[in-house]
Image (cartoon, rainbow, N blue to C red):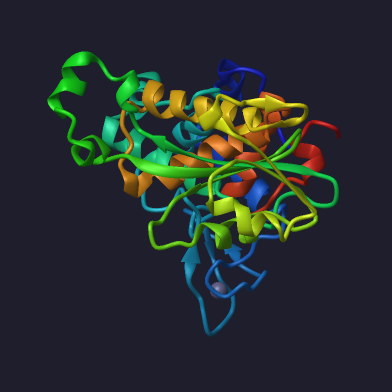
Length: 311
Ligand SMILES: [Zn+2]
């Protein structure tokens, strides 16, 4: 645990100047064991602007931001930490326009910051979800403006041309453990859907889907497979339903359309990761989520226990 911030003013009071920020960041990154990012030698000496490696074969100069997401920007760490706090804790995300206003920086800088912060929110070594007795719901949705939610003018502009209406829309598959974690995967048309199910869900799990043909054969490989027939208006039958994943999709859709208005297919996976990260840390307190995101910037991970606020 490092410093804890319950509010943004507390955070900016603490990070009052760049020196404090750098000392904080050095502690997060190295914990007193200053290590050369070029050769991993632990014996540097301090210079006016940072450190210099003592290893004869290296002798490179470095600072604590070398090799991190903070590198190659002219923005002070104070701005970064403010951005991380806002990005990690806004329930529906924060747009680059909003962030640029909040922090008094140019929108292109805000956009760049948000993308880099988002990168840290991706799962590093994703394991299959579920396990013995765990129900995992799977469903696929279209993200980015369904025609039924468009205004009339825009919908009419497609004149029933389905391909035009589908342009700039991407399918996303969601996998969710009931009461547990979620993962979104942007659908690559070349991928085989049953293979994706195998990759993301442990076969000991109870698979819960709609009646799409895709799931019939792969479902037999699972401990159990139950489905509801949406085409017959069947949405819940006992504990058989896909309401959890549909709820998560609607949250994702609100984030993409409400906060970001438009997300290009190229970047959609990063936004999906951001949304999943926020869902998976939903029980964490804001200060813990800030700390976790900062640690992720240094490659260190908080233990799951710490993240879900049980510690
Ligand atoms: Zn070195």
